[in-house]
Amino acid sequence: MGDAGKIETLPPQKPLRVLHLTFNMGIGGTEQVIRQLVQGMAPEWVESEILCIDGHIGPVGGALQQLGVPVHKVARKQGFDWSLTAAIRKRLREGRFDVVHCHQYTPWIYGWLGALRTNTKVVFTEHGRFYPDRYRYKAMLINPLIALLSHAVVAISEATKDALVRFEFIPRKKIKVIYNGVLPLSRNDQEAQKVRANLGIPNCAFVVGTVSRLDPVKNQSMMLQAFKEFSKSYPEAYLLMVGDGPDKEKLVLLANECGISKRTVFTGFINNPRHYLSAIDVFLLSSHTEGTSMTLLEAMSLEIPTVATRVGGNPEIIVDGVTGMLIEPNMASAFSVALEKLHQDPVLKQSMGKAARQRFDGRFSASVMVYQYKNIYGEHKAHPQVPLQARID
Image (cartoon, rainbow, N blue to C red; front, side):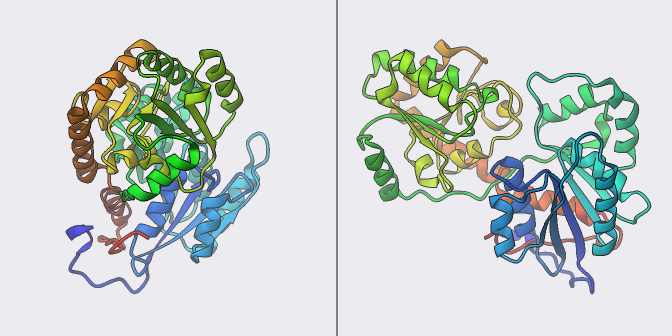
């Protein structure tokens, strides 16, 4: 983590107390961000807890519990649940929290209301937007006030910030951009070869693919169409689809219809997909919208170039033609051409991968993200400086 965590001050007598408020701690980008923040702050300076409002904790939350992190849950009722507001306020008071960090819009509303008549500062992070985005005119009345009275509002990309201004009527000057960050992955070529062998993929094959939830917003049907076009010229290539979700059955049927089912591998959900990601030559991201894709960042850390749609936060992460290629959404033919270019030019593919890792190290590592949130938490008057862990486990 370098010098970022080296602050020449003594720890306070009482650590800063932070409660992360979220829907649940299942599998997803938001949950991984929370995990990085909880594990990344030095415990003598920051004590973290998590409160899930959807009635269940989830596997990431369970893993944190095993490490001794307090993870609580409360079941949100249908409609607006005033009892949830009361439960949050009770937890804030009992836990004597200095900061409630609300992840996503709904937890922000409940967290802000729950923090009323307490001394707890409210931090809100917007992790992504719906597709298609839409106006909610009630937001015009309440969001500017709530934002004004919140300690900080954070967006995970400039595109997300623009959406908060346009659709949520939050003043631009109130919003700070902090990109998501992940721990860099280490490549193990032997394990990657084992993955390929277990999946029936030749070690010498050109493999493109994704690690993602199989969901309509990810538009993986376009990815399959692009691979269909690409495989006409390169029938020895494989498409690796790591993940599960509501679109899986539809995508399996589409692969059959496209005549690419023998070269398309659906693995289902993989708890730790690091070696599967390492088995991919080019990472694909075909989404209708994106905030900051955590698996895209992990691919960059492994020196894997990306072909992605020019939507959301993708253009802020990928330098087109340098670390990967950006394609206009729903352009399967252009997606296919980009794959062909990388397949034909191994030197270009390698140089893009190296450039991707350099960009990751400078802007998207977990240490960079945690340090920036540290500064927000540290703005609390009682704790002007909050250093980080020497490493995030």
